[in-house]
Length: 221
Image 1 (tube, helix red, strand yellow):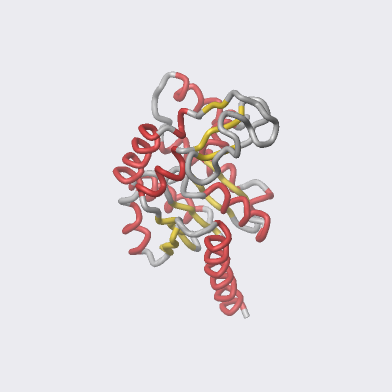
Image 2: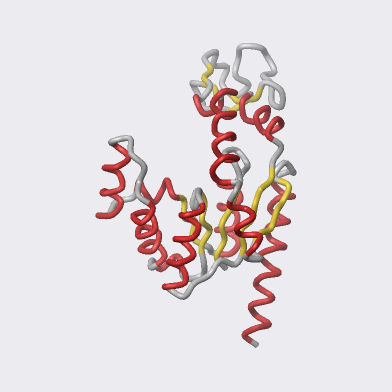
């Protein structure tokens, strides 16, 4: 079972990838994690990143190809963060065809931008113990004091600021969302309400994966 998870930052792809890994033994392939891992190609990719340049698509494809040869990918993989553009999608398809693999499903976690910004941008963390709170959904019981440790210093990540979240959403809609019709045309796109609860999203993804597994079993019987 080979999957791509699509959705903007904050849609819950990381959480769902972790659950898929635990449930089905699928390898989690995050483009960011792969580029940070040791290795000759990865080191070369980091030289581009350190200069502030984009890593060439062919180099990323080569890194993914090498990663797919590792033992933990034998049962399948979950790709998160790649592809992001049409040329990358086409290059990925070509590489998978060469190594006789194919995509089972591309799963889109569809979100409402306004609600997602509200969900992400209100988060803040206790600087002392790391407890996470939210301006609307998980308020402090006592204003100015952490419920867990009583700390009075709090921080907000740059990535959780309204302006940052809005900018990343705009980038997703401009660059990555246009890939969805491409995968719909290939018959592998499945769309799920990413604003549902984590458990509901997990259940819907599991239904898709189980359906695909049953189809493969029927073909091989």
